[in-house]
Length: 140
Image (cartoon, rainbow, N blue to C red; front, side):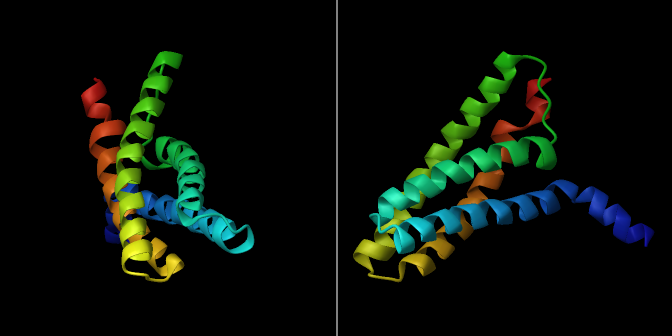
């Protein structure tokens, strides 16, 4: 039991990111499905709205529960928020590209393309968050 607790503690951030990354993916996928199935929007508009809402959700969950980032000033908060949105915007370019290739060029199913897309994006966003946004070592 002690070995399991040691492993959980050692990999706490990764496990938390997998959980909240999964929750963020559910938000993203759910909003995308809502806007393409029930409210028939163009897939790129639905994808952007899904991105926007999931990024807001992800910022607060990553900040508090995954990386435990603490700020002491309002300026630090907005610096972190700005960095988060900047790197998420970079991954959004890849996101939109994957969606375009999958749906417009390959004529693949939109929801299946979105699922593949989210696997790639979650991994990329983890790297951005861990090493570039919430890296407390760089702030000290």
